[in-house]
Image (cartoon, rainbow, N blue to C red; front, top):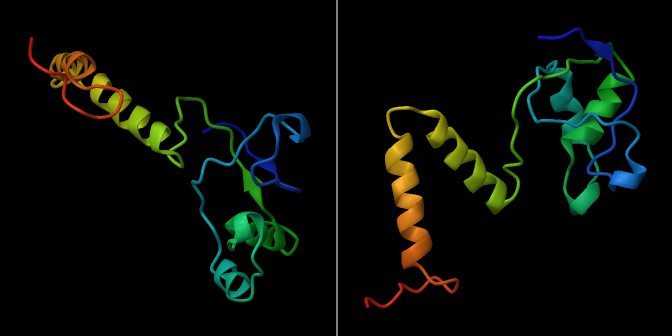
Length: 122
């Protein structure tokens, strides 16, 4: 764990040009119990959903709120593609299944059409 720093603000999913920094919220938190009181009365935010980020900002205004940089590989599992990428990467990192996973991916590339149909045997 790196050196932490105080968080004064957060922006949920900003456009790259509008991002106030190059840090992102990875979804790993240790929160105080008071967050639940805030969430009970939280208005809907981005995406017309109750945003934990908004509640975290309110909590940060009431007590110390810190972030810690993470050095390592991360994946965006909020999309189908990111979820699949994370699972494939995890499988490829495992020496006990790596080769079989590669074989399966190569087989699928050659046996499944873009529309999901099986390739006809030749």
